[in-house]
Image (tube, rainbow, N blue to C red; front, side):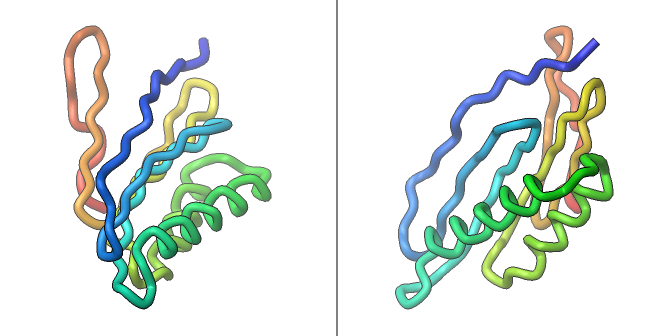
Length: 119
C-alpha cells in the first residue's frame, strides 16, 4: 500500500525582508522561509535555496532519512534561511526533518497529531 498525500499551495505575502513558499513534486515536500534585505531580497535568497534543493534531490539515487539530512545541511549552510521542513515520501514511509521553528501535524482518521517539532 502506498501513501497518498493531498497537498495545497501555501503562499504568504512577501517583501524584501521575508519570503516563504511550499513545494511538492515527485515525492519531495519543502516548506521554506527565507530572510533578506534591500540589497539581497528574501525572494532571491529563497528561490536560490529551493532550486538548490530540487537539483540536489533530483541527482540523488537514495531517498531516505539520510537524504533529508543532506538536504537540510544544504539549507543550514545558507545564512538567510530561517526555517525549513523537508519531507520525502517513499512508498509507505514519510521521512521528515526540520530546521528552525517548525511543527508538522498529520491528520489520520479525523484526528490530528504532531509528528515533528523543532529540529
